[in-house]
Length: 132
Ligand code: ZN
Image (cartoon, rainbow, N blue to C red):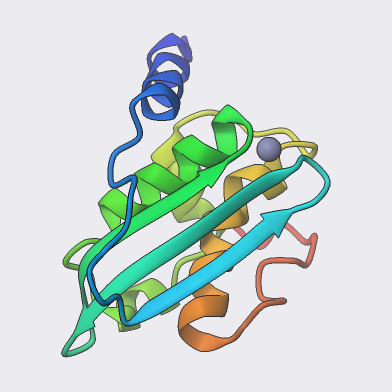
């Protein structure tokens, strides 16, 4: 039942979209998930409060890298005001499968980096409560 989404995650992992660097990014943020060894750096180009372009580099497990790639793709053209409201649900919707407690930090790493990079809210997705 989840086969499509699992294949999709592997596809993003093996062929990540928006992988690389931007010219003169407005925001660069590096973050790690030490429990799994995931590491990403996101780069954003912001114009008039809108994400004009986004890219990332990193390495780690398939969930973390696919989640980051999917988020980089999805946030393009979105306003920072809209992204400010994002939480676990938006990321898990992109991934499309149930993520167990061990892997949830992998999945949410790009969201954590986004929030920290843009608003300095590093702890915002660290809490464990399921406020979906
Ligand atoms: Zn991971």
